Length: 537
Image 1 (spheres, rainbow, N blue to C red):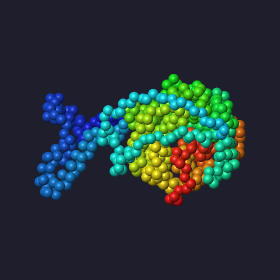
Image 2 (image 1 turned 120 degrees about the horizontal axis):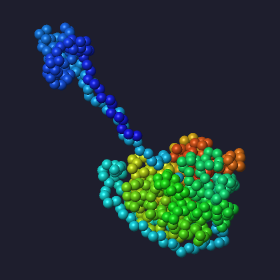
Image 3 (image 1 turned 180 degrees about the horizontal axis):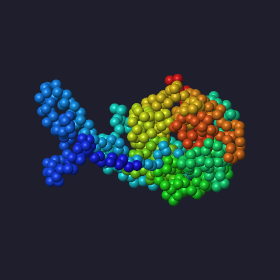
Image 4 (image 1 turned 90 degrees about the vertical axis):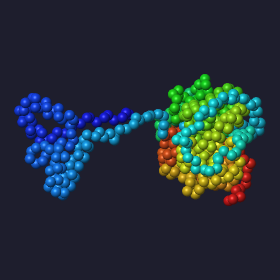
């Protein structure tokens, strides 16, 4: 924690012959001893030699004596005494090479409309714009990552995608399962139903869910957030078309929404903890905001309106004032967002628009600016933090970044979009359900990005992922707590990629994410017009 203590001071070494002559020295008069001590004003490192007669001589005197014996003697003697002087110096000079700096600690872990019923029309609700203050001073050369690209990333107008019909497929009677020939309709629908039944059995009496307890392979206690668990479970139900007013799980959804509204703080924050800096904070808040806004958009339930508006306002006031991202606590001028949390924050803003809540345009402009800071290859690839080197990109973050660009108005045929998608679809990146390879978090973003683009590439990719998820669902075992597993997905069989975070977040997180991936074809209508096939294929 602190610097190492100084080594103890060392006393000068004494000549062993001086100790042998101690008795004789004591027999001399006190005056003579005092006189000799005055002559020796300071210890001399070179008065340490013995000429072989028992008398001490200085190095100079010995050299003179050796000089009389000839040049070879002088050379040998000089080398000998130089070695002695070096050894003596090592004992005198203080060496302090093991000092360590202080350690620092912090939060770093290393978060149904009936077909015959017309959709509810709601008047847009305006959210107050946030007054923002950009950085007063530019970054210094020491804090700016060297640029790899020679062309600027910022070259496109931010025009958020049309979301008026984004939730049009969310009805319990919608067609699920086969997507252009992929999968088997009955097996996929049964997998979703079984997963939702497992989630229903995990709901607590108060209406909430838990990540960290109640079933095998629960999440780490340090990631405990009932808000995050409840929001993820609700998103799975809502994604299959079940709301508090329609579908097979009305009471389950209603109780979950009520719990979220009850946990919300006066400033709009849904997170169920008060301390700043928790990794789960803005993941959980964004998830909850999306769930509340989706339920509001699907039903027009005015009981959710005020809660949704406060949640969006809290998200806006917590956005970085100039660089546009979010992370583990409300952003300030000198803080830094990350792409993982920012991706969920952007989705929350877009879901608010689906619910008729107007979001200030500048909020989307700042998100676009943040994406520019984490982009590589002129916007084709993406990394986690602005401070990461340009080459430190990942598939999950690239898919998250490209999906964000789609929601912010990039065209389907944008060169950077095409290059990024081609990179994601490399053969060596094909989805696998194996140790260190499976990554449902990555699949969640890749699936949405490809689904918006449509065509054969999405169909082929989704068929692989869909089959992997369905085949690995738990169909046997207990249905009673605390050993209930039937209908869920294991986060540790296999352990998956470290970036998946399933082994830390636990079985409920893993199950909810698998359901969200399976629901990809109906979660949102594609942003771009449908295409029948990919010409380049």
